[in-house]
View 1 (cartoon, helix red, strand yellow):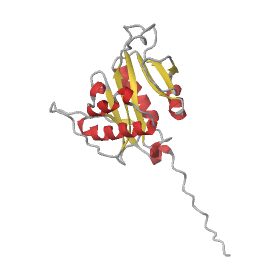
View 2 (cartoon, one colour):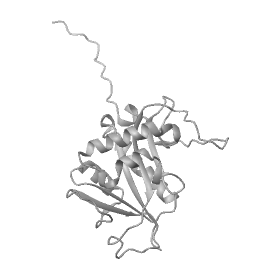
View 3 (tube, one colour):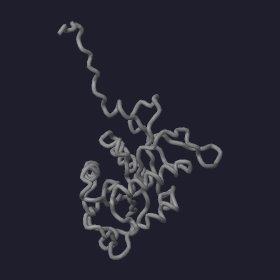
View 4 (cartoon, helix red, strand yellow):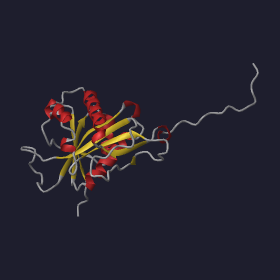
Length: 215
């Protein structure tokens, strides 16, 4: 067999940054079909009944408790080729006083939401009623994006939004079996805490993060 003297050219492996570029934006009216789809995929991925959270009613009433000025839904979308950075926050607004119209209808890759919460008895024991609390909900990314930075940036961005909205503490619950998500939350400072609402699942883990430094 004759061997070629020309050296073989091996393409460098794609890094996550090169392989997937995306933007994260506050959801607007025209994003709601994608939000509903992502929320539905989230629920299906859990393999548990979310009726105790009135999930069907939540979908029907979106944005509901996630609506500004006390909440927000964030959507990650595949970015145009001109976008240079992963997780680039892209603000969309309208000058005519109506709903903004998205100028980026690229594929929706994931979502996350934040809403205000108030602890009801008996979960309000030992909690300062003057502390402004919020809850992170519905973090979900398409399976094809896992390990490529989308979930991480959605978490970072929703925490930033919560701080911007003036919350003191952020809460969430997840399943112990969702080890990657649990590790991602703990990596950004969430710590395990006691239950803050009724959840019938034995596998549930409750987490909390202080958003403001104690003076």
